[in-house]
Length: 108
Image 1 (cartoon, rainbow, N blue to C red):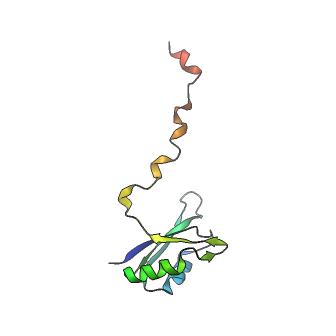
Image 2: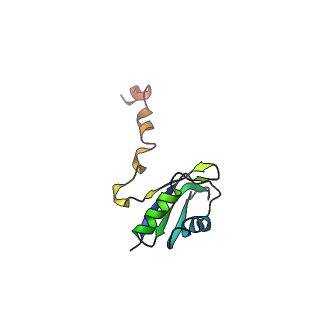
Image 3: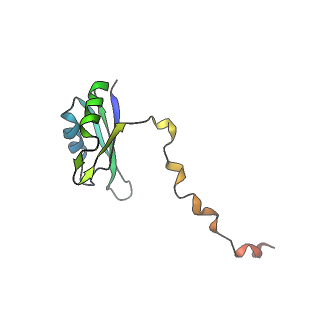
């Protein structure tokens, strides 16, 4: 079973192939994927790499976390399981209650 790593703060020009090369120096890369924005087709600036085993994953983290890539300092760590739900729901919810502030009177 491979070990999945999160790779953040990528330059927007980095491709799946670039990730594969970057991590291939530290072990077997089972998969490498830069996450793309569905609307714009641009990179979201992060991706996931699956290494062959835990030792290779740790070697890649040690070598690449904080490393400069295209003027950005990479963030490399173990990917957390999806079940946590990430921070997805949090953004954009705050503004919803703003409607009708002065217009509430119309209802009566």
